[in-house]
Length: 374
Image 1 (cartoon, rainbow, N blue to C red):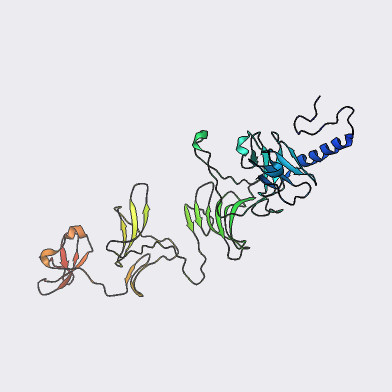
Image 2 (cartoon, rainbow, N blue to C red):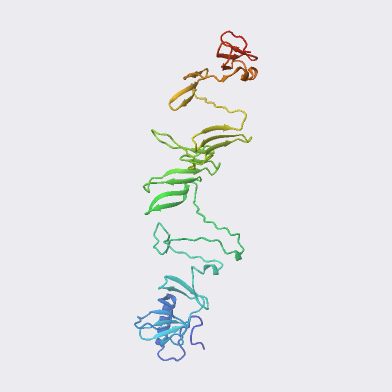
């Protein structure tokens, strides 16, 4: 006949046993301990000097005193003596010293959360979890740590090495985002904020946020300071000042500078260059470069400093400064056919003195008497 239960080793009441209540009460006390097992400290070798009733420890290797010969057992102080029981597979306990939940696998005590990978599936349901901190109603998971690591499975587990952090929201109008704070006041928020476009929002007070950057999830268009309707949209509201986009190269060595480049599908490239020396260029490898404005009463002005040099209106060109023609000696005159009708030059050694000449499409002629310059 069995004298103890098979798993928990609770003493059983035997036939015709005297003082059966002693055995019964001992079983209840042991059952009370095991069903709500709180271990004050693990692998202790020396019994504590002033134990309190229900104090519980696990006994380490080669213990001394009253614990001698009880290696690996659970020591429970009943109030006057130490009682011992063997842990069994699946027994769970709370380690008070380490603030950890443990289970016994038949050989050793293991941390339930740390060893979760030993199971095919582990489901832990709790109202909140705090790691080195306290969770609350809003923050169900709170971690207080200098570093947090998310790592892919080891290579020997036959995985591709990827790792994904997934933040899921319920509907398009909800928000799925990461918020970066300073002293618990939000400063930057990035994610899906009220729609499915990725955005970065900033705040200087933790309450009011403005969109600094947005990518349209349908088109891939990028907006800086605005919602994009083109491949790249940049918007800055600067009352009384200029909205600026700057490309800056601080190097001052020869040939260094900055460039804004636009390339078309035919490979033709237009570049606006600024060199460190102060020279600026508008260059195109296309055979034709157009400068066109289409607003009401369009004008193009060319200024040097604050001085207007040339004004182009829709029907005339106005020179606000004296117009200087190119100067040639007779023998160096360009082809009048190439220049075309209406072209003008200043001939420095014409017969009778310097003279302005014009092209009739074939010859250069003196503006005074229309004679051909020979």
